[in-house]
Structures are given as C-alpha cells and as structure tokens.
Picture 1 (cartoon, helix red, strand yellow):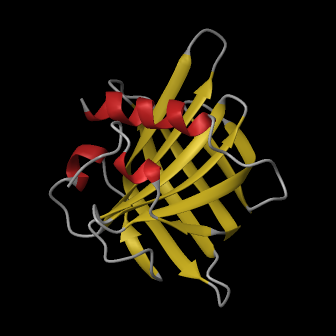
Picture 2 (tube, helix red, strand yellow):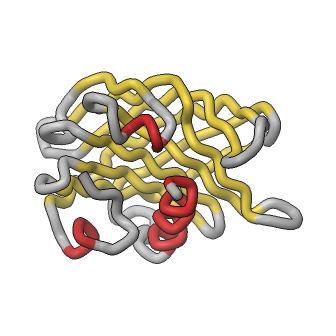
Picture 3 (cartoon, rainbow, N blue to C red):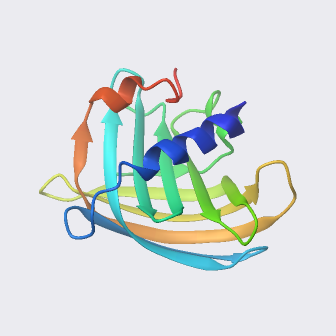
Length: 169
C-alpha cells in the first residue's frame, strides 16, 4: 500500500514543479542497477498538523521526493533515511524516492538506508543533502542515490497538506 502511495505522490508532484529559475534546484545522480542523473527545479512544503515535510525535484518524467516525517519542523538536522513503511514507527526520519521513465516502464526506487541532512539559510530557504541506498519497489534491484537541493523556498501549509494521497499521522 505504501508503494502505491509513493507512486501516487510522484504522479501528483509532476504538475507541481516550478519552471527553472523560480525556486531552488536539485541535482542528483544514481548508479547501480540503473544509472542516471537529474537536474531540476525544487520546491519544499511543511505540513505542521501532520508533522510532514517534503522537498520535490521534478523534470519531465523524472522526479525525486524527500519526505521528512515525525519532526517538529524542517529544521537543521540529520535524518536517517528509511523505507516508507518504517517511517510510520520511527522517530523523525526521512524517505527518499526516485521515479523515472525507462525504455518500457516507469521505475520507482525508495530509500532503505542512508541519510538526509537539512540546513536552512538566513532567508528561510533550504539546502538538503542526501546519500541513500534505494531499491525498486517489489524487487531486489539497488542503486546508490546521492544529491543536493539548494536554495529551495519553503512553503508552510496549503491545500497539498490535506491531499488524499498525502501520508497521514
């Protein structure tokens, strides 16, 4: 069920990315069972009621999502990256997902270990560094996914915080 929510999250995120230059940026690369890279504009949102934050970078059919759950804010700190199912029982943690269109199908990876480090700047924009191991949903295929989102403006609340595909507490 979590895998379905994660894919839904990415599909919904496709329409929400801002054009390049209007916000932050996300640069990432992955290697292993699949190899690739992404440079995209990035957005961030904090949903205080559900204690859920997200950073999204989407370009075309490729997207990376970083979710931080059970935190008091998207404050500076280092968060353990876990599988989405583990995030339900863990203290403050992160989940990183990657989705891209391959030759014949959409491929989705989700983090199972690693770290996400957040650092806000004086203007309220976020930097997020991530270095995770990720696996294909329902498979043994693994990748090493690492990257950085910089200068990402943070939006507080909004309709997206109550979207039906949004993970709940």
